[in-house]
Image (cartoon, rainbow, N blue to C red; front, top):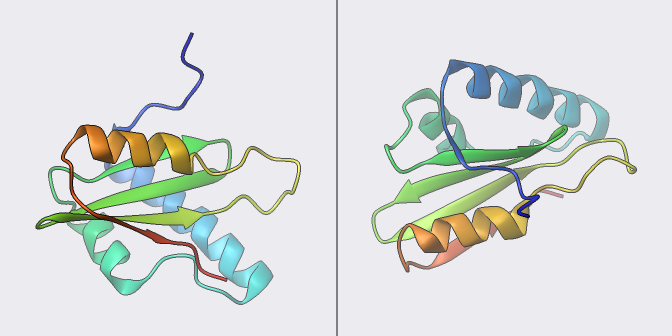
Length: 106
């Protein structure tokens, strides 16, 4: 049985949730978990881009020509699930055998 979260396309609900959680992380740590390119993709997603969530931990997978960039928004609670980085990496590789850059701020 697969217990990994599913990759979901970026829609308004996902974008709002990421904005809320990223702002919470930024306020608590002083570190912005996503860069400008990720925010541009969230506002105007590439058709291949997706998100994966596990509780308050999110991975944003951004499709770029010939490459993937995975951005992590961690949960602040240390007992919360960890960001589904492995599952997002697998999903990206399944969608095209291109290099992957992982963005983990802080």
